[in-house]
Length: 322
Image (cartoon, rainbow, N blue to C red; front, side):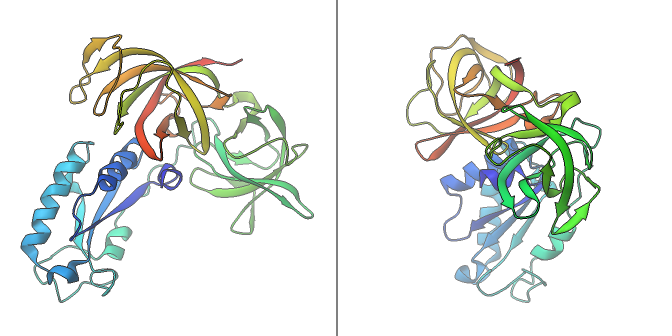
């Protein structure tokens, strides 16, 4: 879900009418916001189980509205759609089972989403999702262009490994391209870069403006759910773009009031569920991350431990490795 959300511009949050808001509903809403998804559709599913009852729909709509408000989504700008995926109600066309519902079907509301402006002016960043060896072509890293433009003939570098070369070919959906723009999921071949030189989590950029490798970084985080407390020395896994790197908390700088962003406590001893804070973090191996103010697409991350997302945040400042 994190990998998907980190590559998406919009999301459909599905909430079942019989289950209501579950812990995962909260987690997914929180992650969607933290990973930069600004457009949301709420699909209230399994309406057939409650005989398409409008009152039950409205109750759950209120509950979900309250939840998404806590992560700064505006319920009035969001479609809440009563659906039955099993029966096919309000999926492609409006259903006669919900005459009280006046909004669009799910597919209609997907068509109403706005395509975001492409960040073509920012430096090139392509996080690597996979690396393939293709007969007759050679090594082909695959990834989504987050920012900037990649053209054939460009000199690019992969960080952290530092392997570089010239872009020979770019292809998307089996079509050759002269250039790739933000949002394009592409495979590309770079002269002189072999299968063993690069891996998932590396980031490609132009040699003239290489991706930033962090020795340590300052982040603003929110603790979503943690069974204990987070202290200096804690080393969970940070999921940032396609990278997964264990990082150690070196310093808890200050605790914030999540509602206002104002400082609540300087140098706290620990953080617990619900706390927002500024922290200094040191990756256990080199990783690429960018300041949220400079390249927002590359500055967000989720923190996972014990099989759950414990926190999420964004990178404020970086001590570069080189």
